[in-house]
Length: 402
Image: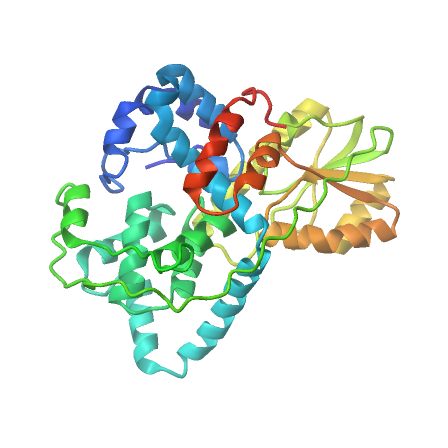
Protein backbone atom coordinates (compact mmCIF):
# COMPACT_ATOMS: atom_id res chain seq x y z
CA UNK A 1 0.00 0.00 0.00
CA UNK A 2 1.50 3.30 -1.10
CA UNK A 3 0.26 6.83 -1.55
CA UNK A 4 1.45 9.47 -4.03
CA UNK A 5 3.59 12.14 -2.36
CA UNK A 6 4.06 14.44 -5.36
CA UNK A 7 1.67 16.00 -7.83
CA UNK A 8 3.24 14.08 -10.70
CA UNK A 9 2.75 10.82 -8.82
CA UNK A 10 -0.85 11.74 -7.97
CA UNK A 11 -1.64 12.46 -11.61
CA UNK A 12 -0.03 9.16 -12.61
CA UNK A 13 -2.06 7.30 -9.97
CA UNK A 14 -5.24 8.93 -11.26
CA UNK A 15 -4.42 7.88 -14.82
CA UNK A 16 -3.82 4.28 -13.71
CA UNK A 17 -7.03 4.15 -11.67
CA UNK A 18 -9.40 5.81 -14.14
CA UNK A 19 -10.21 2.54 -15.99
CA UNK A 20 -11.52 1.18 -12.66
CA UNK A 21 -13.52 4.27 -11.70
CA UNK A 22 -16.75 3.12 -13.38
CA UNK A 23 -18.79 -0.02 -12.82
CA UNK A 24 -15.87 -1.87 -11.25
CA UNK A 25 -15.60 0.80 -8.57
CA UNK A 26 -19.35 0.84 -7.90
CA UNK A 27 -19.39 -2.95 -7.49
CA UNK A 28 -16.29 -3.36 -5.33
CA UNK A 29 -15.74 -0.06 -3.53
CA UNK A 30 -16.90 -1.39 -0.11
CA UNK A 31 -14.65 -4.46 -0.25
CA UNK A 32 -11.39 -4.27 1.66
CA UNK A 33 -8.47 -6.56 0.92
CA UNK A 34 -6.40 -5.18 3.78
CA UNK A 35 -2.91 -3.66 3.62
CA UNK A 36 -1.56 -6.61 1.61
CA UNK A 37 -4.51 -7.01 -0.73
CA UNK A 38 -5.56 -5.34 -3.96
CA UNK A 39 -6.99 -1.86 -3.39
CA UNK A 40 -10.58 -1.33 -4.49
CA UNK A 41 -10.33 2.46 -4.25
CA UNK A 42 -7.94 4.99 -5.79
CA UNK A 43 -5.95 5.76 -2.58
CA UNK A 44 -5.90 9.36 -3.79
CA UNK A 45 -7.66 10.89 -0.78
CA UNK A 46 -4.43 11.92 1.04
CA UNK A 47 -3.35 13.74 -2.13
CA UNK A 48 -6.75 15.40 -2.49
CA UNK A 49 -6.71 16.28 1.22
CA UNK A 50 -3.47 18.28 0.73
CA UNK A 51 -4.55 19.31 -2.76
CA UNK A 52 -1.65 17.80 -4.60
CA UNK A 53 -4.45 17.09 -7.03
CA UNK A 54 -7.87 18.72 -7.19
CA UNK A 55 -11.42 17.42 -7.03
CA UNK A 56 -12.38 18.74 -10.49
CA UNK A 57 -9.34 17.07 -12.04
CA UNK A 58 -10.24 13.73 -10.48
CA UNK A 59 -13.94 13.95 -11.34
CA UNK A 60 -13.30 15.11 -14.92
CA UNK A 61 -10.90 12.23 -15.59
CA UNK A 62 -13.42 9.64 -14.38
CA UNK A 63 -16.29 11.14 -16.37
CA UNK A 64 -14.17 11.40 -19.53
CA UNK A 65 -13.56 7.65 -19.31
CA UNK A 66 -16.97 6.39 -18.19
CA UNK A 67 -19.51 9.19 -18.69
CA UNK A 68 -21.34 10.67 -15.74
CA UNK A 69 -23.64 7.69 -15.36
CA UNK A 70 -20.78 5.21 -15.27
CA UNK A 71 -18.62 7.30 -12.95
CA UNK A 72 -21.43 8.65 -10.77
CA UNK A 73 -20.65 6.61 -7.65
CA UNK A 74 -16.96 7.50 -7.80
CA UNK A 75 -17.74 11.19 -8.33
CA UNK A 76 -20.15 11.17 -5.39
CA UNK A 77 -17.45 9.78 -3.14
CA UNK A 78 -15.11 12.56 -4.27
CA UNK A 79 -17.83 15.07 -3.38
CA UNK A 80 -18.51 13.69 0.11
CA UNK A 81 -15.46 15.42 1.56
CA UNK A 82 -16.43 18.66 -0.22
CA UNK A 83 -19.84 18.43 1.40
CA UNK A 84 -18.44 17.81 4.89
CA UNK A 85 -16.02 20.73 4.56
CA UNK A 86 -18.74 23.06 3.32
CA UNK A 87 -21.10 22.04 6.15
CA UNK A 88 -18.48 22.67 8.85
CA UNK A 89 -17.52 26.02 7.31
CA UNK A 90 -20.92 27.30 8.36
CA UNK A 91 -20.74 25.74 11.84
CA UNK A 92 -17.16 26.12 13.17
CA UNK A 93 -18.47 25.77 16.72
CA UNK A 94 -18.73 22.00 16.13
CA UNK A 95 -14.95 21.84 15.59
CA UNK A 96 -14.29 23.95 18.69
CA UNK A 97 -16.62 21.76 20.79
CA UNK A 98 -14.86 18.59 19.69
CA UNK A 99 -11.46 19.99 20.61
CA UNK A 100 -12.71 21.02 24.06
CA UNK A 101 -14.36 17.62 24.57
CA UNK A 102 -11.12 15.77 23.82
CA UNK A 103 -9.20 17.81 26.40
CA UNK A 104 -11.92 17.28 29.00
CA UNK A 105 -12.25 13.55 28.37
CA UNK A 106 -8.53 12.88 28.41
CA UNK A 107 -8.43 14.53 31.84
CA UNK A 108 -11.33 12.34 33.00
CA UNK A 109 -9.55 9.11 32.06
CA UNK A 110 -7.39 9.25 35.19
CA UNK A 111 -10.53 9.30 37.35
CA UNK A 112 -12.10 6.16 35.88
CA UNK A 113 -9.81 3.12 35.90
CA UNK A 114 -12.20 0.84 33.98
CA UNK A 115 -12.75 3.42 31.27
CA UNK A 116 -9.02 4.07 31.02
CA UNK A 117 -8.31 0.34 30.71
CA UNK A 118 -10.82 -0.08 27.85
CA UNK A 119 -9.33 2.96 26.16
CA UNK A 120 -5.76 1.64 26.41
CA UNK A 121 -6.80 -1.78 25.07
CA UNK A 122 -8.50 -0.08 22.11
CA UNK A 123 -5.53 2.17 21.32
CA UNK A 124 -3.10 -0.76 21.34
CA UNK A 125 -5.33 -3.23 19.45
CA UNK A 126 -5.79 -5.64 22.34
CA UNK A 127 -9.56 -5.82 22.66
CA UNK A 128 -9.93 -9.45 21.54
CA UNK A 129 -12.09 -8.38 18.57
CA UNK A 130 -9.97 -9.67 15.69
CA UNK A 131 -11.07 -7.21 13.03
CA UNK A 132 -10.84 -4.19 15.31
CA UNK A 133 -7.41 -5.11 16.64
CA UNK A 134 -6.09 -5.68 13.11
CA UNK A 135 -7.49 -2.32 12.00
CA UNK A 136 -5.75 -0.54 14.89
CA UNK A 137 -2.38 -1.92 13.78
CA UNK A 138 -3.12 -1.18 10.13
CA UNK A 139 -4.02 2.41 10.97
CA UNK A 140 -0.88 2.98 13.02
CA UNK A 141 1.44 1.29 10.52
CA UNK A 142 0.01 2.64 7.26
CA UNK A 143 -1.95 5.79 8.19
CA UNK A 144 -4.91 4.36 6.33
CA UNK A 145 -8.17 2.46 6.68
CA UNK A 146 -10.72 1.68 3.99
CA UNK A 147 -13.77 3.97 4.23
CA UNK A 148 -16.22 1.17 5.06
CA UNK A 149 -13.78 -0.13 7.68
CA UNK A 150 -13.74 3.33 9.27
CA UNK A 151 -17.50 3.13 9.78
CA UNK A 152 -17.30 -0.31 11.40
CA UNK A 153 -14.31 0.74 13.50
CA UNK A 154 -16.16 3.79 14.82
CA UNK A 155 -19.28 1.74 15.54
CA UNK A 156 -17.34 -0.90 17.51
CA UNK A 157 -15.43 1.83 19.37
CA UNK A 158 -18.62 3.59 20.45
CA UNK A 159 -21.26 0.84 20.84
CA UNK A 160 -19.28 -2.32 21.65
CA UNK A 161 -16.34 -0.86 23.59
CA UNK A 162 -18.48 1.98 24.94
CA UNK A 163 -15.84 4.64 24.42
CA UNK A 164 -16.57 8.30 23.58
CA UNK A 165 -16.69 9.10 19.91
CA UNK A 166 -14.62 12.23 20.54
CA UNK A 167 -11.58 10.18 21.60
CA UNK A 168 -12.01 7.83 18.65
CA UNK A 169 -12.08 10.81 16.32
CA UNK A 170 -8.88 12.07 17.96
CA UNK A 171 -7.21 8.69 17.35
CA UNK A 172 -8.19 8.81 13.68
CA UNK A 173 -7.14 12.45 13.34
CA UNK A 174 -3.71 11.66 14.72
CA UNK A 175 -3.00 8.81 12.31
CA UNK A 176 -5.12 9.02 9.15
CA UNK A 177 -3.17 10.57 6.29
CA UNK A 178 -6.34 12.01 4.77
CA UNK A 179 -8.14 13.08 7.95
CA UNK A 180 -9.40 16.63 7.80
CA UNK A 181 -11.31 18.44 10.57
CA UNK A 182 -14.58 18.24 8.67
CA UNK A 183 -14.76 14.71 7.27
CA UNK A 184 -13.22 13.13 10.37
CA UNK A 185 -15.25 14.96 13.03
CA UNK A 186 -18.55 14.85 11.16
CA UNK A 187 -18.07 11.23 10.09
CA UNK A 188 -17.78 10.13 13.72
CA UNK A 189 -20.79 12.27 14.63
CA UNK A 190 -22.76 10.53 11.89
CA UNK A 191 -21.95 7.06 13.27
CA UNK A 192 -23.35 7.95 16.71
CA UNK A 193 -26.49 9.63 15.41
CA UNK A 194 -25.58 13.28 15.96
CA UNK A 195 -25.05 14.41 12.39
CA UNK A 196 -28.28 12.90 11.06
CA UNK A 197 -30.38 13.00 14.21
CA UNK A 198 -31.14 9.51 15.51
CA UNK A 199 -29.50 7.70 12.58
CA UNK A 200 -26.60 5.52 13.75
CA UNK A 201 -24.36 2.96 12.11
CA UNK A 202 -24.21 -0.53 13.64
CA UNK A 203 -21.24 -2.73 12.71
CA UNK A 204 -22.29 -6.25 11.66
CA UNK A 205 -20.07 -9.31 11.98
CA UNK A 206 -21.46 -10.95 8.83
CA UNK A 207 -20.88 -7.83 6.73
CA UNK A 208 -17.34 -7.42 8.07
CA UNK A 209 -16.56 -11.06 7.20
CA UNK A 210 -18.03 -10.67 3.72
CA UNK A 211 -16.42 -7.34 2.81
CA UNK A 212 -13.03 -8.43 4.14
CA UNK A 213 -13.05 -11.57 2.00
CA UNK A 214 -13.26 -13.74 5.11
CA UNK A 215 -10.05 -12.41 6.64
CA UNK A 216 -11.77 -12.01 10.01
CA UNK A 217 -13.86 -14.43 12.03
CA UNK A 218 -15.38 -11.75 14.30
CA UNK A 219 -16.08 -14.31 17.00
CA UNK A 220 -16.19 -11.75 19.81
CA UNK A 221 -19.74 -10.41 20.21
CA UNK A 222 -20.43 -6.97 18.80
CA UNK A 223 -23.11 -4.61 20.07
CA UNK A 224 -26.55 -5.63 18.87
CA UNK A 225 -27.98 -2.15 18.95
CA UNK A 226 -26.66 1.35 18.40
CA UNK A 227 -28.47 3.74 20.69
CA UNK A 228 -27.99 7.31 19.43
CA UNK A 229 -25.76 9.58 21.47
CA UNK A 230 -27.66 12.23 23.45
CA UNK A 231 -28.57 14.90 20.95
CA UNK A 232 -26.58 18.11 20.98
CA UNK A 233 -27.53 21.50 19.63
CA UNK A 234 -26.35 22.14 16.10
CA UNK A 235 -25.62 25.86 15.81
CA UNK A 236 -27.32 27.84 13.08
CA UNK A 237 -25.19 28.37 9.98
CA UNK A 238 -23.12 31.50 9.77
CA UNK A 239 -22.38 33.29 6.49
CA UNK A 240 -19.09 32.58 4.77
CA UNK A 241 -16.35 35.11 5.29
CA UNK A 242 -15.96 37.42 2.29
CA UNK A 243 -12.98 36.83 0.06
CA UNK A 244 -10.53 39.73 0.08
CA UNK A 245 -9.42 40.66 -3.39
CA UNK A 246 -5.70 40.77 -4.05
CA UNK A 247 -4.03 43.99 -5.15
CA UNK A 248 -2.10 43.22 -8.38
CA UNK A 249 0.13 46.26 -7.79
CA UNK A 250 1.21 45.30 -4.26
CA UNK A 251 4.61 43.89 -3.40
CA UNK A 252 3.49 40.32 -2.82
CA UNK A 253 4.74 37.17 -1.14
CA UNK A 254 3.31 33.69 -1.63
CA UNK A 255 2.82 31.54 1.47
CA UNK A 256 2.30 27.77 1.11
CA UNK A 257 0.70 25.68 3.87
CA UNK A 258 -0.10 21.99 4.13
CA UNK A 259 -3.77 22.78 3.45
CA UNK A 260 -3.04 23.43 -0.23
CA UNK A 261 0.23 22.32 -1.78
CA UNK A 262 -0.56 23.38 -5.36
CA UNK A 263 -0.63 27.15 -5.12
CA UNK A 264 1.12 27.40 -8.47
CA UNK A 265 -2.14 26.18 -10.06
CA UNK A 266 -4.04 29.22 -8.74
CA UNK A 267 -4.52 32.40 -10.70
CA UNK A 268 -1.92 34.52 -8.90
CA UNK A 269 -2.33 38.28 -9.33
CA UNK A 270 0.63 40.50 -10.11
CA UNK A 271 4.29 39.69 -9.55
CA UNK A 272 5.40 37.46 -6.65
CA UNK A 273 8.67 38.60 -5.08
CA UNK A 274 9.02 36.15 -2.17
CA UNK A 275 8.02 32.57 -1.43
CA UNK A 276 7.73 30.80 1.92
CA UNK A 277 6.07 27.80 3.55
CA UNK A 278 5.35 26.45 7.00
CA UNK A 279 5.67 22.86 8.15
CA UNK A 280 2.98 23.21 10.82
CA UNK A 281 -0.13 21.05 10.31
CA UNK A 282 -1.63 21.51 13.77
CA UNK A 283 -1.99 19.15 16.71
CA UNK A 284 0.38 16.28 17.37
CA UNK A 285 0.24 14.08 14.26
CA UNK A 286 1.74 10.61 14.24
CA UNK A 287 5.26 10.52 12.75
CA UNK A 288 4.06 8.88 9.52
CA UNK A 289 1.32 11.46 8.99
CA UNK A 290 3.78 14.28 9.60
CA UNK A 291 6.32 12.71 7.23
CA UNK A 292 3.76 12.38 4.43
CA UNK A 293 2.50 15.94 4.88
CA UNK A 294 6.07 17.27 4.78
CA UNK A 295 6.82 15.36 1.58
CA UNK A 296 3.73 16.84 -0.07
CA UNK A 297 4.61 20.31 1.19
CA UNK A 298 8.17 20.01 -0.13
CA UNK A 299 6.85 19.02 -3.55
CA UNK A 300 4.39 21.92 -3.57
CA UNK A 301 7.04 24.40 -2.49
CA UNK A 302 9.44 23.22 -5.18
CA UNK A 303 6.78 23.45 -7.89
CA UNK A 304 5.93 27.00 -6.81
CA UNK A 305 9.62 27.91 -6.72
CA UNK A 306 10.14 26.53 -10.23
CA UNK A 307 7.19 28.46 -11.61
CA UNK A 308 8.22 31.70 -9.91
CA UNK A 309 11.94 31.26 -10.52
CA UNK A 310 12.98 32.01 -6.94
CA UNK A 311 14.43 30.35 -3.86
CA UNK A 312 11.82 29.52 -1.22
CA UNK A 313 12.13 30.04 2.53
CA UNK A 314 10.76 28.05 5.46
CA UNK A 315 9.30 29.94 8.39
CA UNK A 316 9.43 28.24 11.78
CA UNK A 317 7.35 25.10 12.28
CA UNK A 318 5.18 26.75 14.92
CA UNK A 319 3.57 29.03 12.35
CA UNK A 320 4.87 31.91 14.50
CA UNK A 321 3.49 35.38 13.99
CA UNK A 322 6.90 36.91 14.63
CA UNK A 323 8.54 34.71 11.98
CA UNK A 324 5.95 35.75 9.40
CA UNK A 325 6.26 39.42 10.29
CA UNK A 326 10.05 39.15 9.95
CA UNK A 327 9.74 37.43 6.56
CA UNK A 328 7.37 40.15 5.34
CA UNK A 329 9.62 42.93 6.62
CA UNK A 330 12.82 41.48 5.12
CA UNK A 331 11.13 41.25 1.73
CA UNK A 332 9.33 44.61 2.07
CA UNK A 333 5.97 42.93 1.43
CA UNK A 334 2.68 44.77 1.56
CA UNK A 335 0.61 41.70 0.66
CA UNK A 336 0.85 37.97 1.35
CA UNK A 337 -1.21 35.50 -0.68
CA UNK A 338 -2.08 32.02 0.53
CA UNK A 339 -4.84 29.50 -0.06
CA UNK A 340 -8.05 29.88 1.92
CA UNK A 341 -7.96 27.23 4.64
CA UNK A 342 -11.24 25.67 5.77
CA UNK A 343 -12.13 25.27 9.45
CA UNK A 344 -9.22 23.65 11.28
CA UNK A 345 -5.77 24.35 12.75
CA UNK A 346 -4.35 26.19 9.74
CA UNK A 347 -7.35 28.51 9.54
CA UNK A 348 -7.06 29.15 13.28
CA UNK A 349 -3.46 30.25 12.80
CA UNK A 350 -4.24 32.40 9.77
CA UNK A 351 -6.98 34.11 11.78
CA UNK A 352 -4.34 35.11 14.35
CA UNK A 353 -1.77 36.03 11.72
CA UNK A 354 -4.00 38.35 9.65
CA UNK A 355 -4.48 41.16 12.20
CA UNK A 356 -0.82 40.99 13.27
CA UNK A 357 0.28 41.49 9.67
CA UNK A 358 -2.34 44.20 9.15
CA UNK A 359 -0.80 46.14 12.03
CA UNK A 360 2.42 46.18 9.98
CA UNK A 361 0.59 47.33 6.87
CA UNK A 362 0.62 43.88 5.24
CA UNK A 363 -2.63 42.43 3.88
CA UNK A 364 -3.17 38.65 4.10
CA UNK A 365 -5.19 37.49 1.09
CA UNK A 366 -6.71 34.00 1.12
CA UNK A 367 -7.55 32.76 -2.35
CA UNK A 368 -10.52 30.40 -2.45
CA UNK A 369 -10.73 27.75 -5.13
CA UNK A 370 -13.64 27.94 -7.56
CA UNK A 371 -14.76 24.41 -6.61
CA UNK A 372 -15.17 25.46 -2.97
CA UNK A 373 -16.84 28.74 -3.85
CA UNK A 374 -19.49 26.94 -5.88
CA UNK A 375 -19.95 23.93 -3.59
CA UNK A 376 -19.93 25.25 -0.04
CA UNK A 377 -23.15 27.33 -0.23
CA UNK A 378 -25.03 24.10 -1.12
CA UNK A 379 -23.83 22.16 1.96
CA UNK A 380 -26.90 23.11 3.98
CA UNK A 381 -28.51 19.90 5.20
CA UNK A 382 -27.67 16.33 4.22
CA UNK A 383 -25.56 14.99 1.39
CA UNK A 384 -28.53 13.91 -0.71
CA UNK A 385 -29.80 17.49 -1.17
CA UNK A 386 -26.18 18.50 -1.83
CA UNK A 387 -26.03 16.02 -4.72
CA UNK A 388 -28.21 18.40 -6.69
CA UNK A 389 -25.26 20.79 -6.88
CA UNK A 390 -22.87 18.20 -8.34
CA UNK A 391 -23.80 18.93 -11.99
CA UNK A 392 -22.95 22.59 -11.36
CA UNK A 393 -19.58 21.55 -9.98
CA UNK A 394 -18.94 19.26 -12.91
CA UNK A 395 -19.71 22.09 -15.33
CA UNK A 396 -16.57 23.83 -14.08
CA UNK A 397 -13.65 23.39 -16.48
CA UNK A 398 -11.11 20.86 -15.22
CA UNK A 399 -8.60 23.69 -15.43
CA UNK A 400 -10.71 25.90 -13.15
CA UNK A 401 -8.84 24.81 -10.05
CA UNK A 402 -8.00 28.32 -8.97
